[in-house]
Amino acid sequence: MNRSLSIRSNHRRNGSQNTSTKRTGFSFNSLRGNIQPELSRKLYRIIKSENNLITAHETAGRERISIATQLSEWGEQTNDAAVSDVSDKVGVILSELGEQEDQYAHSLDDARGVLKHIRNTEKSVQPSRDGKDKIADEIAKLKMKEPQSARLVVLEQELVRAEAENLVAEAQLTNITRQKLKEAYEAEFAATIERAEKQIILAKHGRRLLQLLDDSPVVPGDMRPAYHHAQQARQILNDAEDDLRDWRPEQDDFAVDPSDSVSNARGKQSVGHDDDAHIVAGSATGDRAARESDAGSVVSDGTRQGEALAAH
Amino acid sequence: MNRSLSIRSNHRRNGSQNTSTKRTGFSFNSLRGNIQPELSRKLYRIIKSENNLITAHETAGRERISIATQLSEWGEQTNDAAVSDVSDKVGVILSELGEQEDQYAHSLDDARGVLKHIRNTEKSVQPSRDGKDKIADEIAKLKMKEPQSARLVVLEQELVRAEAENLVAEAQLTNITRQKLKEAYEAEFAATIERAEKQIILAKHGRRLLQLLDDSPVVPGDMRPAYHHAQQARQILNDAEDDLRDWRPEQDDFAVDPSDSVSNARGKQSVGHDDDAHIVAGSATGDRAARESDAGSVVSDGTRQGEALAAH
Image: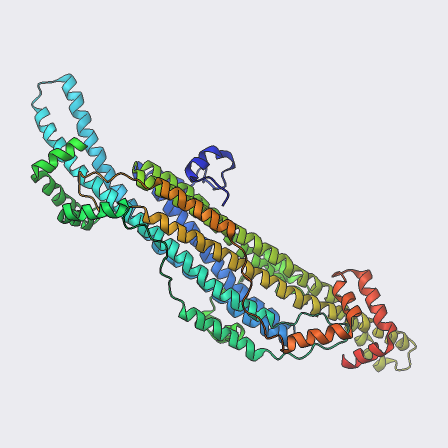
């Protein structure tokens, strides 16, 4: 891992040697990306790239399984009992490696679904920001042109409502963003570990199978000693099957120090604002009714509203 | 691993639900496959499929690295210090996951190169088989038509030479096939284990990073507690880098019982025919001169030749 401690700064410094591929030029995909609201555009693209990643792993799994069958059939036509048996059994292992690759793709797809929650929330927060800004602009213009206009009072009231609504939207955004970011990549890392551990099991048993193949050279005209390992080879496959069945996700042994500020913050939080926190966390993304009722509860609490606007 | 103990029989029984993709219909690839000699056709196709597999893993690596950069940039635009730092550092981990995927593709490519030795030998053995068969056919026909023909003596001599030449070719084929099959898949399994172990290291440190992100919900208008984990996050990346650098291939703990017949056969072999074995093993595939000199040495050894033809 010979890289700097930030991929971001890295990317800027070595912009020209950047190894990531960027879609450039015209394409339907990039067009569709551009009609996304500014706020959700980056995540929209990430979700598209995750789809390419998933497809690549699916393809890898499929090719593995295809190679497995072909290898077995090739082994059969060699008319060499040892090569035939070992290639067939190695084929079984390779095929299962492919299945694991495919399951990995499915797990990545689940994680991708979690990222969509963030994107959808981003998408729904954009109009709230825009609406608030639009009213503020209108007030500023009107103050210049007609400082005594009666419409100013109405607009100021509208702005307070829009700010309250936006305050809720922004809280929903930060809550969903953090929860779902964590959830999505925890799922990806767990899937990475699962695929890795299962493929290690398979590869190690695959190596055992290869050791059954006597590759000492023969001289022309000499017969190979007969192959006596069919039973042993079957046993190796049974062992691999048992080991896979017994696999369990390991409890992660890395833990954050419980006295640090993450836990403290969480502790404080749950004492102070349990009910509201529950409402915000529970409100469905883009659920207009829920969002409005949240906004209402904030507005009715004069003190909170004042504090909030001040902080804002 | 819910499958039978042979992928071959499996394939036949469940032919219709076979998950592997078969190229069907017209394509330049399948045409090119058909002009391969019969003997090397299956392996030719396997080598093509391995290429698809390698491309899939390369694509997966590239997409991972692209997602890593995009995630970091998305995090920056959230204007949330915690999300920004964690997404950037998780991006570094993801990017390295992608690099490992790419290195895996390179290792698979090396293993694929080893399989080509078998294919090339198969290709070069085909004319030897065909030549021998052609002479035998000619003799059979001539015996029917002109049993007294003087040409029969010449043809019989040619057949003995062709059989001797083919005997060497077949010995080369079995030697190369077993050695290179073992070598290729040992390399693939070793690469699978290396990628898996390194990706486990990365994924576990990635999980640690995610634990630094406080995802307890906030209520509208409340500020998030300040993010204090930048130092800790950097340390996690340092740990990941150290762990990757310290990674060593594990000695395989599966060993075949040294008293079994593989080792015995190898032992016997090395006592009996060390020199010849060396010549056969050492002769380059398709190296006409080397093959002829092998054939010569066999022919000059009357006893061996007799035995060999009898066995044949």
